[in-house]
Amino acid sequence: MSSADPLLALQDAIKRNEAITYLKDGAPVQSLKAATHVKLGSAAVMPKTTPTRWRRPTSDKEALAMDPSADPSKFFALDSIALTWNTRTEPAAVYMRQATTEVVIYVQLTDRRPVLDWLEGKIQNHDRLAPLSQGESVACYASTTPKTPPPNVATLPSSTLSPSKPGGTASAQQRPGGSKRSYVPDAADLEAVKKIRANEIELRDRNTVLRGVKVNNFTQIKEYVAQLKSAAKGGKGSAPAVSASAASNPSSKPGSKKPRIFPIIMVSSSPTALLTLHNIKKFLEESQYEASESARQRNGGKTEDMIPIYRRKTHIDSSGKEIETRIKYFAVDGVDALAKFGPDAWDRVVCVMTTGQEWQFKPYKWTEPKQLFHNVKGIYFSWMSDPPNPRIKDWNVSELKIDQFKRHVDKSVVAHFWRLLDGWMQTHKPSLLG
Image 1 (tube, rainbow, N blue to C red):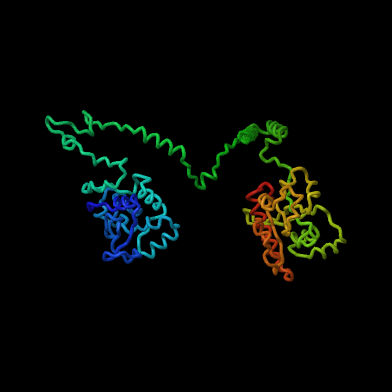
Image 2 (cartoon, one colour; image 1 turned 45 degrees about the horizontal axis):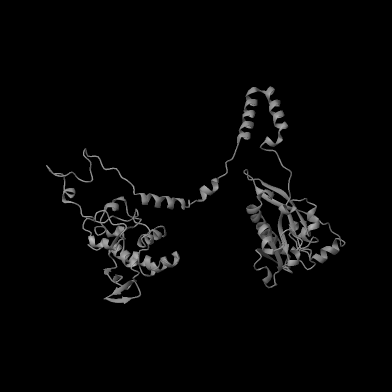
């Protein structure tokens, strides 16, 4: 390694707030690809291919103790580190694109932040940073922070630097008997470490998130399984005892069913709405749109205030057999009908169909559109030829288009509606899914 360390020279220029520029034939150039040298502030000029002590991730374990000048292919060159510093404020994609343009080996994203932290003096060491060699100039350490001088710079007595001789002094690094001196941590360093750990944020991945922090108690299930096993071993005589115990405490049975709670869809009571209580049932059950006025006349102008909607849903079981199930929803168009479902009716509302008029929400539990559509799924139906409605732009609603003439596309619109609603319920109200 040369007597001037490029990393220390670069770090020294950064601490003096000096620019890192590129040179060709002694003249500044903008492109690192065209440059031959890198000017590190006002103190040093080095070839851009000068190897640094920062190891590349592809290096093996032997590179930990190797000199970069002996095997430069295992270390980043000065141009890579300089480009990393000059693009420190750029996003990762811009940095990698610029490195490709300048024909420079880019520092991987996982190493980019440690490199910048070391150059700024935020960290003093890193596992990819090779130690200084024996021939390193002591003058290079002049650029380091005075508070953290390298341990080898201090001038030691000659008796401590040379091996023990007859009548001489033993090495300062060893005690009589050959044992190493115990390490005594600095009190200021301990306090600094305590403060860092107090503010440390534990990183979490998908596995730790899925594990959760709730402690589940499966005692009742274990007891029930133990009773079943004892009943199977004891014969028919002890089976009624288990059944009686389970019947006396239905809530302890793992398979005990709770009363089914059906989700509720609220439609607009506006006569201009594309979907009302008159035509919502045919649209969602048969995937066939009918104008609200035509549906009202067909029904004699009368309709219930609570419309049950049965959704057919098919799935394939483990044996490959197709199974069809029916999921029940209710559709209402006002808070009076909603009140018939009980005090927790708003907890069962999963969807609100809006026409973009705010007066629709005045009697609701949440009168502000942004707050309402934070708690329920918002759907806005419009004609295919209608322009975007600017009033719903900030309402967090999904817009679905209905064609005025092509009834064969209604099926895809209804399927899209159910996909949106299923996705929202899976995230916010999974207990209401069938």
